[in-house]
Image (cartoon, rainbow, N blue to C red; front, top):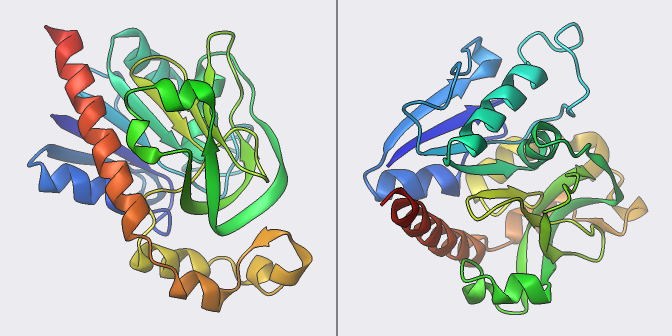
Length: 241
């Protein structure tokens, strides 16, 4: 499988997504846009497109952030979805999927930074890609916004602080507002960029302290992510037949 990552910042690393791809001996390529690398013009040569997070939102222009081409990324996402590729968006990436498909992002009711449970909807529990999640699963969070919903979108999971944690846009296209890719190393990178929020953790309902973030075990949610990705890959290969 040919897996391509769009990475917006060095501290928004693919983490467990990349670990999964390499452990399955997939071909892994990157567009590290923060280093000036350009995104592909189309989805040809990609089986799974994964768009990572970032401090930007989909309305940020090239004038405001020279390495973030929101419109260009949305065009690639649209091309991938229309051509039957598998697509996953994480945080900002999930919002870009919604925008690419005609659903504007919005602000989440609560800022969430840390590890908190998500709750699967009935639709989510019935979706074979998520049956192993159970009714609830503790996952990582690092966000203020959430993806928009198209007419056909289905909410797979929500949290107390955000009503759109995982969204299915089609059988092969998924937006994850939550961060199941977090590992201790990725968390350390994010902490270095988030001192302002973390220093005010007590002011928010769903923001962990730095000490709490470093003490969490992220392995269970990583394993759940790996199983989801295996199932998604199997669905993609079956769809190609």
